Structure formats: C-alpha cells, structure tokens
Image (cartoon, rainbow, N blue to C red; front, side, top):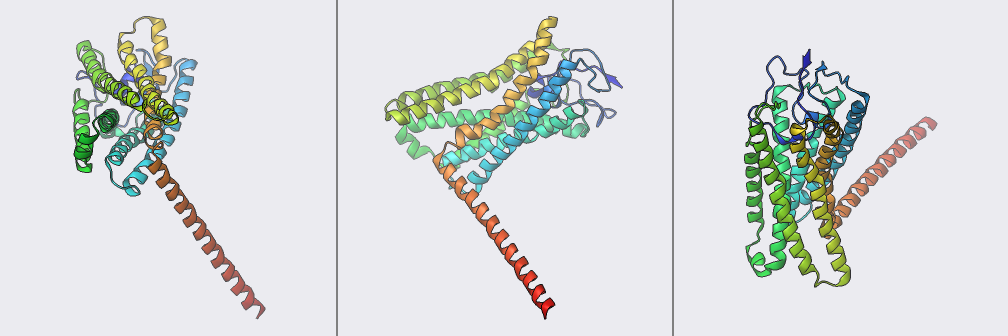
Length: 357
C-alpha cells in the first residue's frame, strides 16, 4: 500500500481544517498516521511506500533524533508535572496559587503523556496502530491541553499583576472557589478553540482559505494574545519589583525574563512554521522546513517540561512540601527495608537454632 502524505511537521499539532481527509474503515489501524503522530516527520508530497521510511538518510536521522527528543520530553514532562499534581493536589493547602499550579500541571501532564502515541508511531515508520478512535482522541486531547496550558499561563500572569497592583481588591475578591471556576472556564474555552476546525485525523491542503483561517485563529488565540498579556503584566510586575531590595529585585527580574523568554522561544517558531510549511514551494525552503519543523514541535512540547520549573519549583512552600514528601518516602522505604531485614534475620536465626537442637 502507498499513500500520499501531506507536508508533515509543526502544523500537525494544531488541528485539522474542515477539508482534511480522515481515516476510513479500511485504513483504521493501518499505515495512515494521525496529526500528532507525524510531529517529527519531514516528507514532501512524494509517496512513501507502506510508510516504511525509505526517504533520504538525513531525514531518517531527523526521525531518529525526534524520537529521542520526544522520549526525553515524555519522561521529564510526565514525571515533573505528575510530581506537581501530587504535591499541589494532596500535600499543599488549597490556595488560589495552588489551584493555578494544579490546573497547569494537569494540562501539561496530559499534553506530554499523549506524546507516547507519537513516539510509538514514529518508531514504526509513521504507522498508526491504534485505530481511528484513538487517532481522534489523540488529536483532541493534545490540542485542548495545549490551549489549556497556554490560557492558564495567561490567567496566572493576570492574577499576579492584580495581586501586586490592586492589593486591596485582590485580597477581597481572590478566592479558591473563583479560581476553580476560572479553571473550568479555561478548559471550556480550550475545547471551543479546538472545535474551530473539524475532528478529522488528517490534512489535505485543497482548501487554502480554511487552512490559513485555522492557522490565523490559533496563532492569535494560542500565541499573540497570551504573549501580549504575559509580556505586559510581567513588565508591570517588574516595575513594581524595582521597589524591592536589590537581591530580591534581581531574582524577580531573572524569573520574569525567564518566563517571557521561554514562552516566546518555545511557541513562536512553532506558529511561524505553521504558515511557512503549506506555502513553501521553493525546494530549498522545503528542505529547511523538513529539518527545522521537528525542532519547532520539540520546542512546543518542551514548554510543558519547563513550566513546573519556572512556575512551581520556585515556590518556597512547594519545595518545602516536596522535600517533606521525599523525606517521608525515603524514611518509609528505609523503615520497610529494616523491618524486612530484621524478619529475615529472625527467621534465619530460628532455623539455625532449630537445626542445632
């Protein structure tokens, strides 16, 4: 079997225009790969027989490197965000901040956890063995959690701005219940943004208008608006931080710069390549897209690994609870080991005593 794959790299993460083709019953569980699966591939419009990855060697190397990078992101992202979910959900007192941290960690955890399906597909030369339902579920979960993560970052920046510049209002109006309701609203809006397109598994670029409108909408909602909000609010926070002592001021400025720079460098290349790829007709530009496309997708996923470090692990209360939890686990494990060793020692001693008598 041979198939005609679309240009594949960054745009596959962002969803599927209404003109996209979808898996038929004969293709389900076969060789056609869904949109998130081909994040790391780099193929032109030429055919690839049976998806066996028989392309030029440089692109096969890119595929191998993509698998390695995705594996690292999958491990670090799931473990880091899983740890945040455990500590903020079960160990820390419920506050507005912990509600934000928990919501962000859940979105990033699911975003990176579903990367395992793309890893498996890439390792099988872009074959999708999970069927049509998982294809659509993989698409839905990945895109919704991408938007939920970005919107949570935007809301967190607004909340910090209000807490610093409108102290009295924030003290009276900021409640855990309202924060939880806002989180529900974030997920609803994220689902609406995902629905701005079809629920198919594949692209074809026969309708350029729907493709460009989809990319433009998601570029605005997924980058421009959130980045402007994050930039303006954290610049305002930085201005207020100038009143702090020098040591605290420098630390705050470094954190603010890291937050803005990380969001910018992780997401802008991804969205830029969304527009470049379908419009690339020059062979040299196509080669650049094939090579750089997987890198931009890796940067997008990397953001979900960096969020716990930037937003959570810098929180003193979180690190304190984390140390307590780790110490408790180690103490419990050590205690269990000592008890088991003592039981074995007693059993061996009794056996030896009975043997001698």
